Length: 411
Image 1 (cartoon, rainbow, N blue to C red):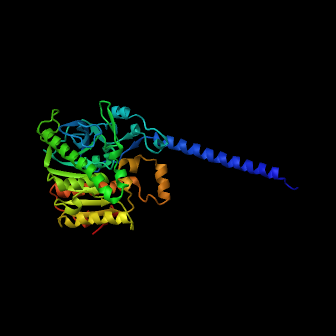
Image 2 (cartoon, rainbow, N blue to C red):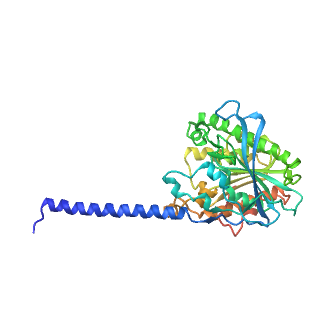
Image 3 (cartoon, one colour):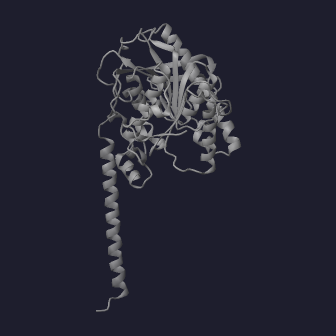
């Protein structure tokens, strides 16, 4: 029987309807799976050191200097400070993000919220307001800076692990540069567009340097102010917790991405920095030409055979700093398969595992997020143990371990 054009069109319409139905059902199933996954509990990796971990927050305002990046003239610099430290004993862990801060910031909005865990379901290993461990009279201090506009709590895995090895780890969020700062009193401050480092990086090279240096000046000044406040806290903490417990003769600074660039520039500018680490950050500022005197490590993701002009320029700037470092205090390490965005809790753990598995299947992500964080925490505490605890210098080959074959020594 010969089929008419009308019959054929009807059959095509039926197949189109079936395909559309299957596609819609797939989308609904995917959304349901992402929603289910978003609301599942998640625990951060267990710290590897012998100390329990405590955490406390502070709101510090600089009465002496103004915030150069604030949109309103006359605004004082203010920091929301997070401190992780060796605790006297294990205790129930605090919320990953304290409830009042989550409420102030409000729930995540939009479809992209489906690919990130609900912060209320995430648990770390830090006890709120615990006493400092009496095992040592004082502890070295490490300043930790987040990448770009990320909140510092998103690096809790790195902070908790370092604190468990006997360090007081101090991170902070800064209004108008951190994406969202939710203070415990309910105030919420958001980053301004002109302080977006991603927009700076997109500019032509001649304009990029000036834009980034403006941000870098404010970011390094934030660290200097935080150290001034820590000196006051060490002299007379109203709670008594940190009085005399901070060894500010042993200060390290490290950070991820722009936070790593800030660490390098701050160590160049301020002699209070005794050792530093740049975790996969493009260097900016005068440190590129002048170098450093302190021990310093570049801890890099796997950039493969990148040969584009920007990659070559970044590599040359890192080489410029590395060549000027003391021979017995310089390391350059890459983690095989590591991705720039998996150094934080958010990139490595809090993003949807469904999405991360898909990215691994496509070859975009080549390492498990927890594994990348495990290698990173090992490298960070080994480096600071060597240069802040008097354990003796550590070479890149000393840092290599059969437990972490992902570590690649770069000469």
